[in-house]
Every structure is written in structure tokens, then in C-alpha cells.
Amino acid sequence: MKTIAVYPNIGKKEAPLVLERIFAFFADKPVRLILPKDESRFFRRERYGVENIWREPADMALSIGGDGTLLGVCRSYGTRSVPVCGINIGTLGFMADIELDELETKLNKIYTGDYRIEHRLLLSGFVNSGGHKRFLGHAINDVVIAKGGVSRMLRLGLRINKTHLIDYQADGLIISSPTGSTAYSLSAGGPIMNPIVKALVLTPICAHTFNMRPIVIDEKDVVHVKVAAIHQDIVVTFDGQESYRLLPGDEVIVRKSRAQARIVKFEDKDYYQILRTKLWKNV
Image 1 (cartoon, rainbow, N blue to C red):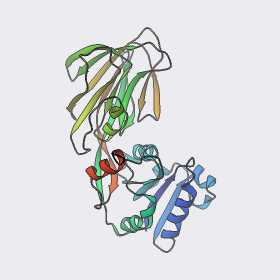
Image 2 (tube, helix red, strand yellow):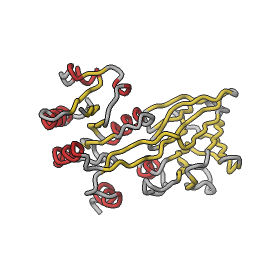
Image 3 (tube, rainbow, N blue to C red):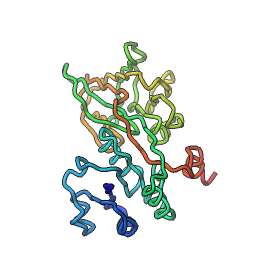
Image 4 (cartoon, one colour):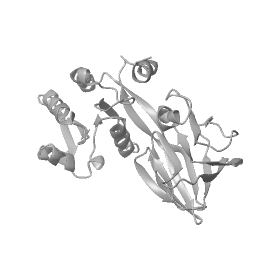
């Protein structure tokens, strides 16, 4: 019996109906469905609820929501080798591969194994503060160093591997994976990259110099960012969902993780078709 972990976004109004359709589809099949404990209570399916669900052995995870929901689930399973499939009920759903009008068709493909798994680069983020280095977390899209609510800019010292590249002033810096090139990095002027490209993108946020431009580097490069500011309202965020406070003088280190995210894809769509239908559908 296969086990599928289902992660519905309780903030989406379509989530109850989608969950109902998923349970109806698998009702007569040898598949065990499990839900996070809180979500199981919210949707009145307590018998399927599991504490610490990410520790439960699973063959696949389904996220019901937008790309944000999918990112969170992927981070939870990034080190567990569990593939994740996104069901889009968000506004864009660039990463989610199932739309509502094809739900049962794609669930049948999952059941019969008619899908492929794309391995996506994960970023690992660390901070060196006061001479002590500690791991902060993983990101699928990006690690962002930015000012908080204050209007004062940051002074950033950028080093790649052992080479000091530039000191500059800006509102922040985005270190993006190829998957995240269509997220915050794109809105800040970064390039679009196919997720299979083995590279990282460094995109400044409102740099106060013409010398600092988006840079594409090798995926094996290690990025060091020294943060200097006269204020203490500085944060580093992971996929825009997890954030940590930084202090002036801290160094953020970002590198390719040994783990990878595994995202379920189907053969009826390719990356450039998704670009066309999601980003440029009105062009």
C-alpha cells in the first residue's frame, strides 16, 4: 500500500472541495492518505491526522494551494527523498503541475506511475556571527538578505569562494536557484533560467551603484555576504517564508545543498510551455 501525505492550505477556499475529490478518487484504491494533525481537524478528517507528518514514511506528498504551499512542503521533504506534486489553487501556480480541470486525470497518472521526477537544486544558508557558524535552513527559490522596516540602506561585501568581488550599498541581495529565477529575482531585474541549468543567480535589490548587476555563477560556487549597517533591522529570509534577524558584521554563507527537492512533473507540459501559459498568457 502506498502512502500519500496531503498538505491542504486552509486559507484557500477551494481546498475543501479539492480534498474531497482526492479522497473520492483514492477511496477504492490501495492507497493510504494522511494529513497533518491540525489540517485534519480543520477539515474534519481526524482519523487521517498524523503528528509530525514529515517524519512519517511516505511515497509522495501532495500540496494543495499555490507555489508558496508547494515550497513549504518541498523544504520539509528535501532531505527525505520524497517527491512532491503541486495542485494549483493559487493565483499563478508556476511550480504546481496540476490544475483543477485535470485533477482526476493527473491523480490517475500518479496512481499508475505515469509521471517523472525533476530534481531541483536546494540552497543551504548559514550565518557566521561573532565567530560562530550555524546552519539556518534550506531554500528552493531564494535566500534574501534585506533591510527590515527601516529606510536606511545596507552595506554589503560580496565574496565568491575566496575572491572578494565588490562592496556596495543596496536594499539587499537575492541569492536565487534556477527554480527561483521566476520569483523575487525576476521582479528585481534578474534573468529567467530553465530549472535544469546548473547555476545560481545573484540579484541586487535597488543597488545604489551602476557597477552591481545581476550575476550568474556556477552552482558549486559558495557565496559570502558580509553585512554592514548602522542599524540592526536586517533579516535573511528563506523562500520568503522563514526569516532570521541579522546583526551588523554578520556574514551570510549560501551554497548548494547536498539534498535536492523532488518535484513531480507530467509529460504533457514542458518548461517553455509553462512560461508561455503562466507568465505571458496575455501577451
